[in-house]
Image 1 (cartoon, rainbow, N blue to C red):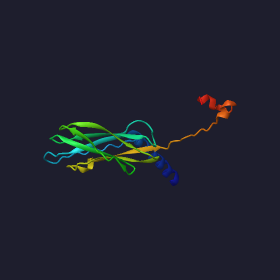
Image 2 (cartoon, one colour):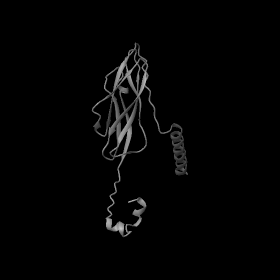
Image 3 (cartoon, rainbow, N blue to C red):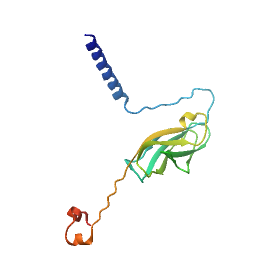
Image 4 (cartoon, rainbow, N blue to C red):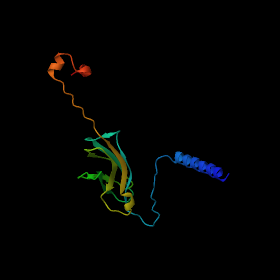
Length: 168
């Protein structure tokens, strides 16, 4: 009797966890709110996303960074992209008016397959360093290369299986 009561409670707990996960979704958004007195000069990375679909080894990874100037004076934001230990040597610079926002496209060529994180970072140190770095998952798929060797003799004899359909 006791074990069946625990099993029923455990099942209800699992159902509640699944219902909560379904309601919340797969994203977690965190907002920082500064309630201190006085105006603070702050540049903030609001979001970063990988642009496009699947990235293959040898391709450029495009990451779009969303940056905002939360201060009262114009600022220049310098954004840098790093993926899997490889960093863009030149940061991207964008001028922002007070309260202004911008989307910055950054690219980095990745030469090997990997599952890692891309890091978009602000080069400036400001009032709130917690919003100066944003990580985004990056998956780079391996490329499958195929070499077809077909001699002219095989072509003349009509051999080669279905290679004729390739227009070879």
